[in-house]
Structure formats: C-alpha cells, structure tokens
Image (cartoon, rainbow, N blue to C red; front, side):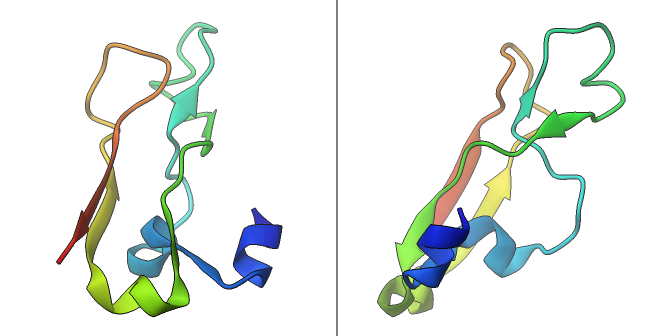
Length: 76
C-alpha cells in the first residue's frame, strides 16, 4: 500500500479517519471478529486530483455475513 501512496494515490478511508482498529477482514477462528482482531485488506484509492470529489469513505463493520465487511465510497 505504501507504493500506491508514494505514487500519489489517496487512501480514501484514511483521508477521513486516522484511528487504528478499523478492519475489513477477520479470520474464521473463534471470536476474532468479536474481539476485533483483523486486517484491513479492502481499499478505495483515488488520485490526488480526485481528492476534492471525496464526500465520505467508510468501513461497514456492523454488517455481518462474510469474513469481509463492505466498504463504501461516496464522491460528489
């Protein structure tokens, strides 16, 4: 991911939220999702020029049904 950022791309989620502990994937091992032991492996990147079009970017960790959760990007 650092190569994308060095190349001038913007991690849209981090643009809005710099707090740690935000994951998009959890192992199937028992209780890891409940304990929030995961990885962030789903991303939306935009170019620096598109930064001004960002309205929001979020991780929908409350939505269950998979080992991943949806991510959302809203541009305007």
